[in-house]
Amino acid sequence: MHHFGIIGWPLEHSFSAKYFAEKFLQDNVDADYQLCPVQNREQISVAMQHFDGFNVTYPYKQTIISHLSALDDIAQQIGAVNVVCQGIGYNTDWLGFSQSLSPLLTPSDRHALILGSGGVSKAVQFALNRMGILFTVVSRTPSTDCITYQHIDEALLRQYQIIINCTPLGMYPYIDTYPDIPYHALSASHILFDCVYNPTQTLFLQYGQQVGARIKNGLDMLYIQADLAWEIWSRQLNINL
Image (tube, rainbow, N blue to C red; front, side, top):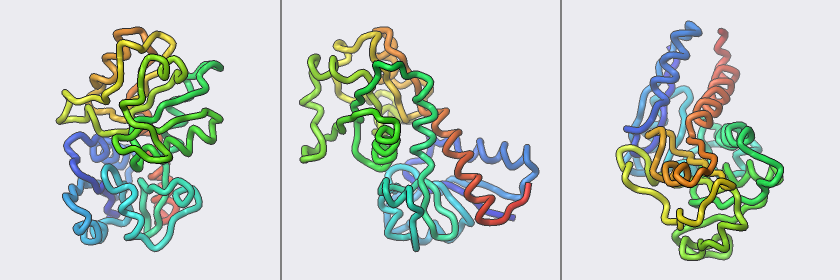
């Protein structure tokens, strides 16, 4: 039997175990998938030993890199990992995001605000570069590469049609949290994409929906990146379906 799982903290929100359990049953794969909550980075090396392959989620998509023997080319360029197999790190988040966002886009949607600067944000930045969409990153900490939330006003939101939440704000069980942006300045011309998928509709998305914005959560992104992760594991471990 092969053993797969996900490393992160917290993991109460995760649908991954259910998704892969159903996938393994449907495809008659002799494997299991376990949630592996890791509360601090010192526990990562021990957790890794339990799995033939595993996913990585918040807050370890960058931290995990120092525990790996190598990265594939895309993960190296992104600087974040969400899939590991045999000590090698990969990133499937960027494709999950781009394939999920693309159906919402119109030709006028050419500028994006990315809320957050962590591992998911890095994959989103890579995807938007590939898609030819210009973006600005928003972070709580000012730097030469980011603006802060205090910079977001009505004038700025008129310039950016796409707003992407790459923070854990709103994620179960902290469903009463949301990014601090001026929601009253949004309109039906905006897209709000939330990488969070549990709950189905965060307050971030609800506030966007109230003004007629196009909204989407991260569930399709989750499923797409998970299927791509399975392709990596099954190929590298020679699992025949």
